[in-house]
Amino acid sequence: MESINREPLPPTTFPEQLTLKYEFAARGNLPPVTVYWYHRAGGDAYTPPGMTVEEARKIPGQGPQIAGTGRGGFPGEGPGGARGARAGEARGAQAGAGAPGARQGGAGVPGGGQQGSGYNCIFAGSKGYLGTSGRGEGVGLLPGSRWADYTLPPQFLTRSPGHQRDWIRACKGGSPSCSDFSIAGPYTEWLVLGAAAIRAEGKILYDAKTGTITNNREANKYLKLDYRKGWEVKL
Image (tube, rainbow, N blue to C red; front, side, top):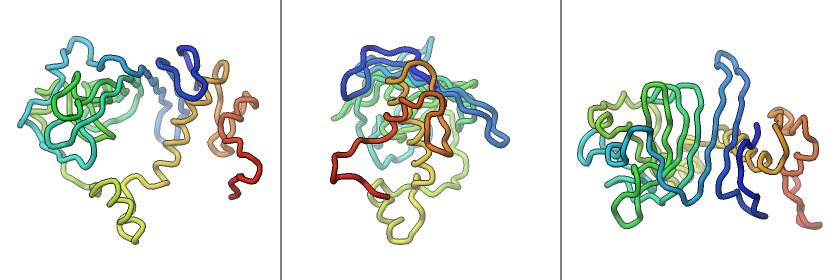
């Protein structure tokens, strides 16, 4: 992976604007995939080319009405916080939208109303666009007229009763959480490699089995914390 565009690096946070490129090798029967992440804090909401924000939004009362458990961008799904990032193109299947990319844009405005499309993440597929709001709630097809005509497939995945209840249920021996460590761990691992990529020069090659960057030994210092003496974490 590598950072292919970035503003000057702040001392403790991501730059206001950057582009990250992730390249994944083939796995089993899955082909190689490239993911672009476009980040732009505080920017305008992203909308697909040739589509207005009004066209992108869900049509109130039409299409599947999905109740969210956290922050969302539409009535009945909770208010979403505005984000101004964009995430980019990838290849693979994504429900209802063909091969996805992700583009982040504006979400709902706390207290009612909408900013932009109402989505803060938009996946660009070969057959259209799919958006989500909040932390993945508020799913819908773009433009809103496509979602108005859409019928949900049969449900086969366990639904979360809410972030806290999901965690407590799993701790008490109930159903595993909807995104347990076996899922969230590897996902977070590759995602946070972006923090190393924006500090290292050029492309970095990562070995997930050893948890190390193989072509830039110096960049491995960005993969772990430096603890003060006496405060080390021992595993």
